[in-house]
Image 1 (cartoon, rainbow, N blue to C red):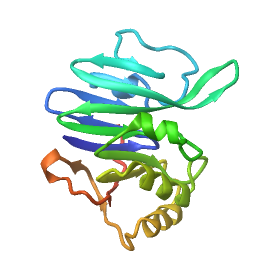
Image 2 (cartoon, rainbow, N blue to C red):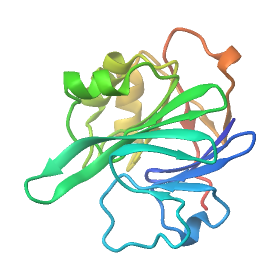
Image 3 (tube, one colour):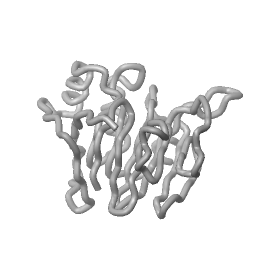
Length: 192
């Protein structure tokens, strides 16, 4: 699987047969088979049934997707959804714009994962909370997102025990290449 960072919370996950784009509009994801949105959309744009934008279980093009509400407003419903993807023998978790530590129940619902996309800083988890969330979820690969500045990213990497980090243009990952210890991979923003 090839992972490309498009900016903010948006990634392109290119599997053997399916491409998923997270947290972007339909126009920006025109070549994607599946589009997910973590935040409640302001207006619906789903004309062809490929958008997933809330909690629940979905199967699209043989990809299993589970949406888990991480934040709700009374009377308004979920406002942030984390997504689990089962794609190419990997389990990936995109936390969206989560802005507070996960509850034990949310951690239990997420379960065992291989790759974690986690927000760091800004209006989301601060670097310490993000590192604690990584400890809760125990992924093999950690990909930070929502990067507003290198200061918070550097602090997160220190919290994770990675003193230095190298920015990579993309990430190619297979199940066989994963180790048991969490490794931070910082991706460069590549645009849409």
